[in-house]
Amino acid sequence: MMKAAILERPGSPLVIDDLAIAKPGPHEVLIRTAACGLCHSDLHFIDGAYPHPLPAVPGHEAAGVVEAVGSEVRTVKPGDHVVTCLSAFCGHCEFCVTGRLALCLGGDTRRVEGQAPRLTRAGSGEVVNQMLNLSAFAEQMLVHEHACVAIDRDMPLDRAAVIGCAVTTGAGTIFNACKLVPGETVAVVGCGGVGLAAINAARIAGAGRVIAVDPVAEKRDLAKVLGATDAFDPTADGAAGAILELTRGGVDYAVEAVGRQASADLAVQLLRRGGTAIILGMMPLDCKVGLSAMDLLSGKKLQGAIMGMNRFPVDLPRLVDFYLRGLLDLDTIIAERIPLAGVNDGFEKMKQGHSARSVIVFDQ
Image 1 (spheres, rainbow, N blue to C red):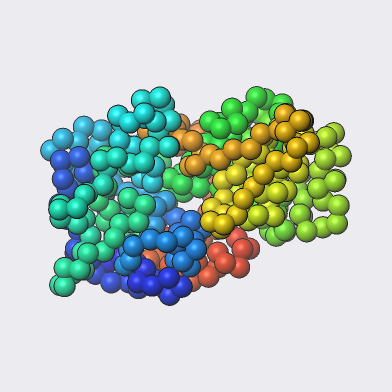
Image 2 (cartoon, rainbow, N blue to C red):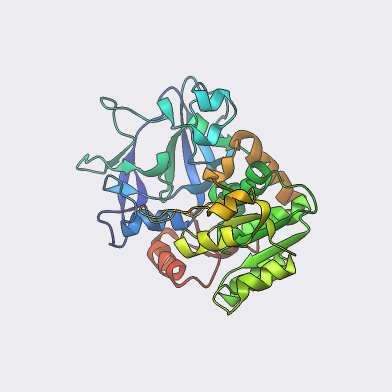
């Protein structure tokens, strides 16, 4: 039996209730959740912008301690500290065997029809859906072994949690999708958790200029703490022109970390000849982003980078090491720590857009 935050209907507050969780199957891991970040992707499902079978438990940016493992699990053991990742990989599809783990559709990492569900209502036995293969707004998680990775036990678990999505996505985009060369220039449009992580990673990678673009002054200030060399309000007159002038024709990479049409269009606008725009934000499903004929003639490129195109069993321990060595600043990204009961208030603060990450911390 465990407490969990359940989404019953789109647009309604999450409900805290008791759930039963199954025992681990052969390749499954039972984790005692230590902390879980509130991500804007969760809000898209909660508000109904993206559909999902309901009822369901959201939450996907988490860390915890392994309590039990299935008979075939070889990658983690009870007592291990782990970070979970929504891009669970099967290990044998075309994407996995060609090194593009983030594109794997999950294959056999979920329980299938005919198998007992992982989550049910305590008492009634009603099935509760697992969101993004994790459902981390709960005291425990039951996941496939390829949805978590063991980390250094010196790593604080509240900070480790945000690596599971925001940092993996933002930093992974810089390291994996951009493959940034020291001295190249980066603009990051949107300075929430993902954008701030991209800015921090660009500093680690040796970017020549790191330009933060956000309408909220507090977030622009945070961006400068994390490594931005310059910061602009995109709603100010002439902001795009000022960035193009500052960079003598545009940036090498523009990272969109908001999920809005205007911010994606701005990312494209900020590119220099041959530059690349990477769209990370979960945009409304009817949105389209494009390149003009002149953009194409200028060699500009447009791409997505789901979850930063991570290879999380390798990338996450490296990011933990970056934090422990003082390179990765996770303390600034976390704005507040809240109990599970404060999850709805946390999402209301997220809608206001004035702070960085809220993290649910469970009693251990």
